[in-house]
Image 1: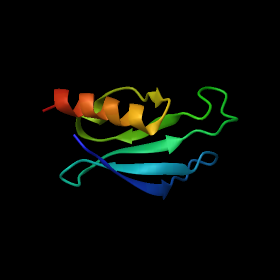
Image 2 (image 1 turned 90 degrees about the vertical axis):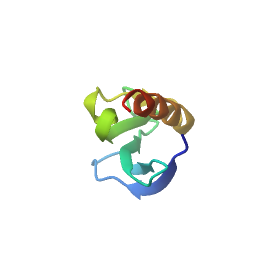
Image 3 (image 1 turned 60 degrees about the vertical axis):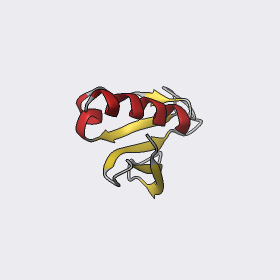
Length: 81
């Protein structure tokens, strides 16, 4: 599955760089936030801030990069169909 990632600022208080993630049908499936290098838990990773549909029914993982996040989203959405 291919995704469209739209840059967005997320009002989290610290880490504001984000992406809205749309599926091939242009449905919003996730909101990702980029964690700062100073983040103590997962520096410079991407965090699943919010998920919708099958993506929203699980815990909130972090990803080393946007490619890893998209791979994970693809797996979750495929299993939820």
